Image 1 (tube, rainbow, N blue to C red):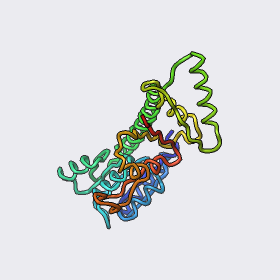
Image 2 (image 1 turned 90 degrees about the vertical axis):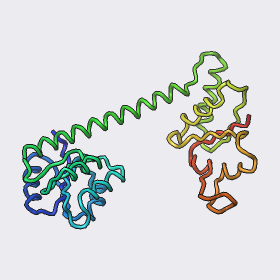
Image 3 (image 1 turned 180 degrees about the vertical axis):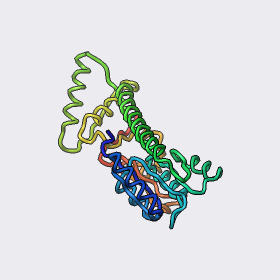
Image 4 (image 1 turned 135 degrees about the vertical axis):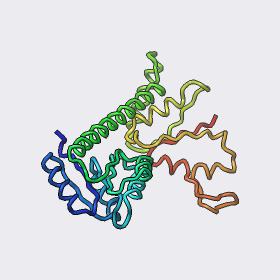
Length: 250
C-alpha cells in the first residue's frame, strides 16, 4: 500500500524510538532512526525518507534548527515536530519554519498513523503537481517557439534543421534573414533537436553590448581583473556549456 515508504524518527528517547519501531514495522513502513542532531542532514540526504518525525530537544542541534537547515537545503520531506514541552511560541515557530504538523508528548499512535498517511499523500500530490507544471512548461515552450508552415521553402528549412542537428561534430551555423523572419526560432529548433537539447540555450544581442565589454560578456572575468570588476562574472560560453550560443549581430 505504501510501497515500503521510509519514515525517519529523530529523537534521543529510546522508549520513543522503540514504540515507533513497533508501529512502523507493523504497518509496513521502513523505519530510520537518528539520535544526534549533527548526523541528521547527512542521513536524510542518504536515506531520502518520505516522512520525518523530529523531536525539538535533541543533543547537538535542537529540532527547530534542524528543521531550518532542512528547509534551507530545499529538502521538502514533510516534517512532524514532536516535543514534551509544548508552548505556543515553539508551535508557531515550527509552523513558520515549514513543519507539516506539531505534536506534543505523550504521542497518540492512531494520530501518528493518520499523520504518516496524510504526509505521504500530500507529498505524492505535490510531486504530481510538480510533474504537471514541468510538462506544462515544456508544452508552453514548444508552442511559444514552434515554427509553423507547409510551404516548400519552410519544409526545406525543416530538413536543414534536421541535417544540422544530426551532425556528429560541433558546427557553427550562420542564420540570415530580415528582422522578424524567425532566425531565433530556427536557432532554438536546432538546439532542441540536437543531442544536447537539455543543455542551456543562451542568446546574446551583440549590438547591445559595448565593444569594450564583448570579451567579458563572452568569456567572463575574475574578480579584480579590471577596474569595477568587483566579483567574478561567468561568460556566456561557460554558461552554455555543451549547449548553444546564439549571437545576434543585426
